Length: 200
Image (tube, rainbow, N blue to C red):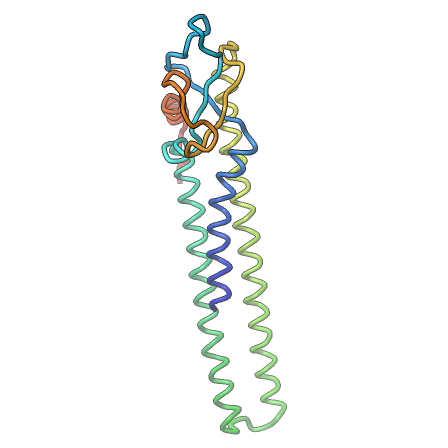
C-alpha cells in the first residue's frame, strides 16, 4: 500500500514539474498587445519576455488543467488505496486461517493463495494502467497549453514588432529589466479573454 501511495505521489509531482519543463524548454513564450514596448529608437531592443510561472498561475485554462489532473490523481490514489486495503485484509485473513489450520485441505489453501496472488497482480496492473493514463493525460494537457500560448504569441507578434520573445521562470533567466519588456500581464489577460471553458 505504501508503495502504491509513493508511486502516485511521485506521478503527481512529476506531472506538475513536467508541465513547467515542457512549457519552459519547449516553447519560448513571450508578449502582449496592450503593453507599451520599449521603443527601439530610444535605445531599447525589439524584444519582450513573459514569466511562465505567472502565466500558469493566472491563465484560467492552465488552472483548470492542473485541477483536472489533480482530481484524476486523487481519484486514482483513492481507488488504489481502497483495493490495497481490501487485499491486505484478505491476506491477513488467509494468514490467520493458515496458522490455525482452518483449511480443510491443502488444495483449498493453495487455491486461496493463488486467488490472493492474482488479486495482487491485478492491483499492480491497475496501478500501472492508471499511472500510464495519468501521464498520457498530463502530456496532452501540457501540449495543448504550450500550443495555446505559442499560438497566441505568434499572433501577437505577426507585425514583427519583436525580434525575440523570451520565457522566464521565477527570475531564472532574466534577473533585471525595465518594465516595458515584461508583457506577462497582458498575455495572461489576452489568453483569458480568448479562452472559453468547455461545458461539463
